[in-house]
Image 1: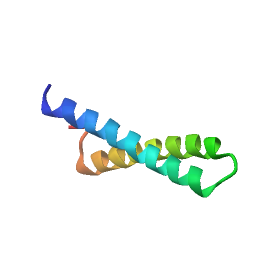
Image 2 (image 1 turned 60 degrees about the vertical axis):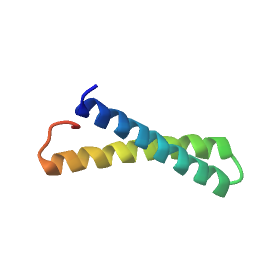
Image 3 (image 1 turned 180 degrees about the horizontal axis):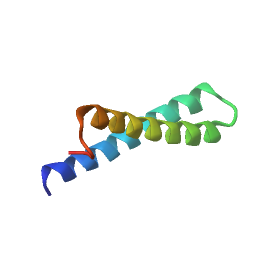
Image 4 (image 1 turned 180 degrees about the vertical axis):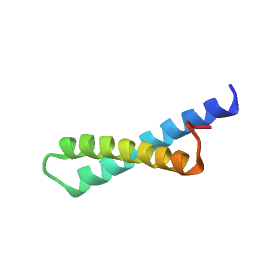
Length: 66
């Protein structure tokens, strides 16, 4: 496994971690319909994290991760 593969896996893992934390936060803050808020927060966290990585790559002039 080379460095670019490790960076891809770390980015995916961190996006899942951020999604989980955001989903759990929303589920505990919004007591009613907690499962829906968890799913929405999880998806939002993953999408925003991947979008941040994409923006950083674009600003750095890279076409992809690594």
